[in-house]
Length: 284
Ligand SMILES: [Zn+2]
Image 1 (cartoon, rainbow, N blue to C red):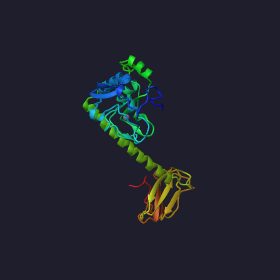
Image 2 (image 1 turned 135 degrees about the horizontal axis):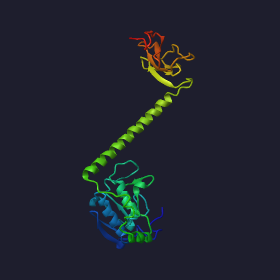
Image 3 (image 1 turned 30 degrees about the vertical axis):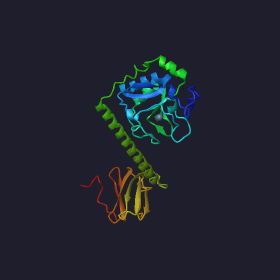
Image 4 (image 1 turned 180 degrees about the horizontal axis):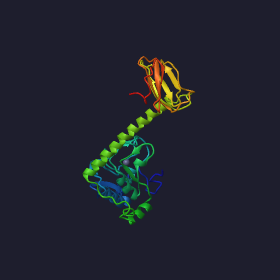
């Protein structure tokens, strides 16, 4: 990324540019910004309020003669080219899903005015931060085009009511919760799938039964093959038998010394100490 100095804005921190700043009052806040870009800041702050975003003065600022936090690199704030909006609600974080209040509509406003958003950065996200990425010439071109309504016809945004904002906020946090649940489910599925990939069984595993001790289990495949593990004993299977219908279930006996296989057509096949009580088709 080019620095503001490379783009023709003079030197930033530690050299202060206080004399090149002007005060802008718009969207319910006052900020000091670089003179040539001030009309763009003013327009974007006003539009930010118009799309329903409530700016908070005590959490909003632009010009500060300082380096980027934890570095010796000049921050765009030291040229008055960057602004932080509601910084307590829009964190600087590695968590791309972190809770924030900046909305896509707000981001769209600032982009239209030639700013890039810290929330788009790869790696650490700076959700509060917007910075002007053009040259002084770009700023002059954009200022001449004000108001920047080029996209207004296609992205007509009405300010949200407080109730709508609350609803959007609730939806966003619900979505975040859902994402966590889905991630957990995916992890569970992967673990289950790897356990159920059984070499030696020709057909897919369709059911499983656990021994009474919990120290073993049987898996049964659609072709009637049985796979036993731990303290689960092998008492026979239907593997190699010509079946009318696929096997779909296995149930262990109370003692764990036998099991019954069930087929999709109601066929019942006892093994070990399992007792034949008739097929599902004929049982009362
Ligand atoms: Zn910033």
